Length: 124
Image (cartoon, rainbow, N blue to C red; front, side, top):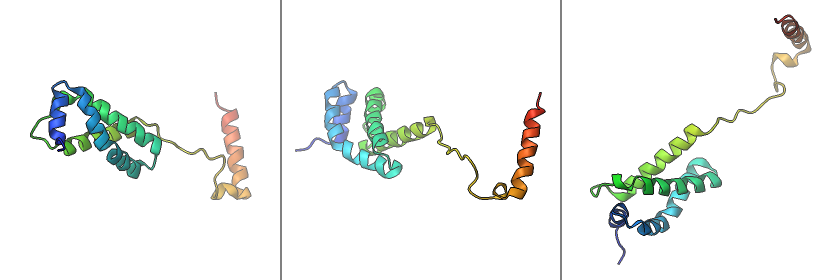
């Protein structure tokens, strides 16, 4: 007979942290798939799954028996993803020159370049 997730989490909350391994075995793959679909990044998904279980261990005392475990773990998972996205530095591609536009037109580019050079040379 399988022990319900809620009972396992109550055991973890009460100090039997080895039971977290059973929950890990049950939820590792579903959480990984959840994150992979969301992020399209396997390495980040693995890191986030680990973060979820570290948070469960850290915040196990906040689990309430009237809360379905699945809802609780996925709330932690969403929070972990939100925190990771907030901490990530935005990646902005660097363009050496515009792909199109008025600066590709030599009649516009030359005066703009002269104006920029003058501004740089005349700067204090």
